[in-house]
Length: 411
Image (cartoon, rainbow, N blue to C red):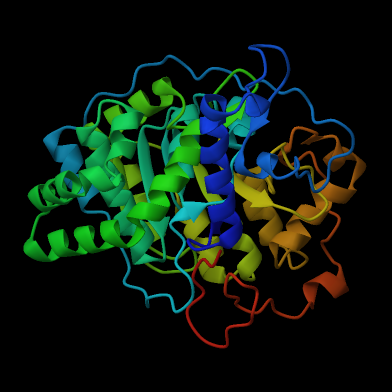
């Protein structure tokens, strides 16, 4: 999920993170613990009382594995770049609610073993957390897709800064006050038209200060002995930078329930001879009933037995230390099979099987991750109550009902 850019709690947490980072310089009371002395998680929610919605007792001492050392794929050829550049966006109404260019998910490291070296095409909604997971998967093509054009432009700005920045620290420096002129000049120089330049600069200026705080947090998430994010792990950043420079990362505007973007992404994957291996939906599935367009979009993607839908979920599921969300990987073919059944109109119905069945519960790990496939019995099919449940209203991020608008991803 993404979090409101002006959330007082997030801003407080960001400032607290910065303060804790500076504390050893000003006060012995905040001195860092001795190196290697204890299991430590420093993610934004961990700073606020080790918030663990579902876990009991002390958190598991999970150590994120190091990422694969497999080299990034070679840069795309000119012909392949043309294929990628031909991927279509769909024009959507501008959101009338808050814009979400930052995430409030922090512990993607728990999915690393299950994503490791999946390769193929990684497709994900929302913002920069996609780069952490795509690096773990060693994706061969990374496509971010969002209904909000501000998020799409934020990704494109990242791509330009990544290409120009050998290190994550240099990338983050573009969001500092002292480098506004440098950043603006870069965006103007790489834009394909004056109109695009103006839009890139506008989005950069709109979110610069808040992203400076947020990216500081992303870079300094710590789990045990590791900094497992794309901005904290030099290996992850190097991989993403090579992918950007090789033409293998793109951002498109699209709707999970739309008619253009996901179909076009599938066409691009087929033209490159790559399967889609990861479709990351964040918590988007919680804001709509499964439509025929959504089912058709997913089934149209070239995929295989390794392909997963990766979602975040809350109800009755373990969350990793320092996070609010449970991370669930669902085998694509099993997911498509369930949602083709009348008893599975929503993600809540889908997740009931893994949450409540004895076989399903065995697939839920206390570190806050689970894997879902055909071994888990279908308990909702034929359930009249589930099948005839009232439609889930489209919602704004605040949870208030929205009476009109497309079935866009709302988080």
